[in-house]
Length: 110
Length: 113
Image (cartoon, rainbow over all chains, first blue to last red):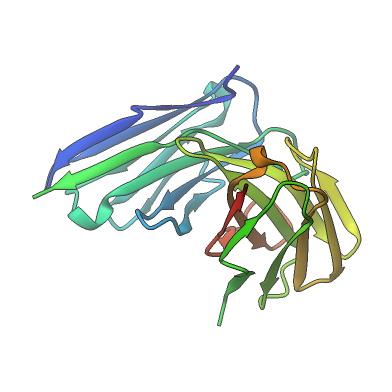
């Protein structure tokens, strides 16, 4: 079954609205990361090993490793936030092999 | 300039042909990855390399092999490509460890006819 489940699968927001993206893990994990994939396909890392709460601009990641969950909060969404948000977990300590979720596809409209 | 490059960007091959995808990085990162991404799915790890000649299988290594002879280069080889290997392939690199960001290449779109 799916080891990394992301919800919602897709989301449409009006510009300025906030969003909460969820990532749940079915097995224990060592660490996790959040990634953003632009509509044209390129990938960037947003947060890496974000245990606890970390913020970068309008993005806030909150991860509770022992509860096997992480969330990504996007505040005051902008059209340029549109794209796919992926989370990934490192299953086992020290091998740096990541298992990805299927992603949340976000569309922000004017 | 922190960059991961991939060549070629687009490739069309016939079933049974050999395929070589190349990845380079200029950050002296120890760890390099090959992933594939199919429509509507996240990335799947094919292989990881921890340094020169130190490679390990990911979740879907069947039908693929890799080569890393220099720290800055990591190649993905498909011997006798199959139609179900049609996909977008991403290479990534990072420093060795959990607390480090992965840097991605632009991807290679491979079509096997």
